[in-house]
Length: 400
Ligand SMILES: O=C(O)C(=O)C[C@]1(C(=O)O)C=C[C@@H](O)C=C1
Image 1 (tube, rainbow, N blue to C red):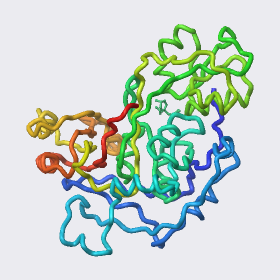
Image 2 (image 1 turned 45 degrees about the vertical axis):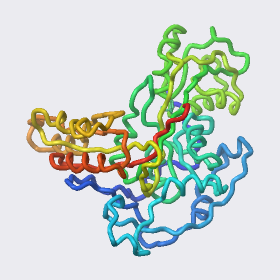
Image 3 (image 1 turned 120 degrees about the vertical axis):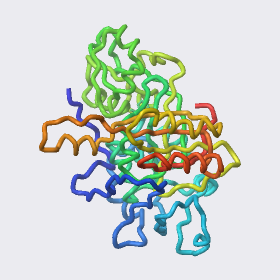
């Protein structure tokens, strides 16, 4: 069944020029510059916000007031690695990346950051955005791509997107989008996910035949939903599922979503904490157009993506650059390099490629300000075909 998604303030527009630079293979460690509107050095987010607001924003639902965001001055990032500071950096025309102090000041001084998330009001991603940036204006986006694009086009200041879950694993789409887009990871936030089974008022558990939710949420409640014998139907987000069953007053369908979604869409909670494990945590990334300057004052993490030549033991060698410097890895993910694969298949010959090229995403526990991390990446660069630092940011060491 195709559930019609709710109206979102920001939805993908095919007419919009694709700003994503082509993926390039390079052996230098690259810190890409922000995408820059062609003819403007100055842009008012105020003027953008009026064109993307809608009658159905969660702000309406919750009655929260909207503040306009003052115009901000854009600065073009240099192509150079901003972490490798040189004498050039004293010039005023050079980039001034945001520092972690700057980020927290913006929140505490009451300036409302506009933060994109995927889903509608009541989605876990909205809670993650509010946890990452207290007092922010959370801006719903239809798809993950839309949230990336909203930051790139200066419609919002940040995006907060899920990257992995303790039960369901990686959110592959966002790994792929990190590579395709040129945003920087400036932080992470972990959120405890507690799912509820929701239904319209008066509907009993026995009356339900099917359940709608985000595929990750359905996977996280696999055992409970199997026991209940409910047919799963995937939709864009948990809160969207709640909104849909509420709007259509469905009698045979429930939704897996949060308590907040139940409240917003006037649904009853038939069961609480239906996730397969009580420790259900999703890790979200905070994304910005510019990187932050990494520090060593608190625990930092660094996320990189790289590709390797074919050959025996190359991955072993790549991981050894961290092991020999006593740097702990917290995550490794491999993804097919899609453009390569497509080119190979688009060839006029019918021969299949001998190997599928893969790229590797690694998170490690060290700041780029730490010489161990710099040396490890310098070493990795010697035998990687491509290497990019996605971000060096404070680790979320708090309670989820
Ligand atoms: O659908 C939502 O509410 C979301 O925020 C998305 C999402 C995800 O993509 O993993 C986020 C957290 C939960 O793990 C389930 C779903």
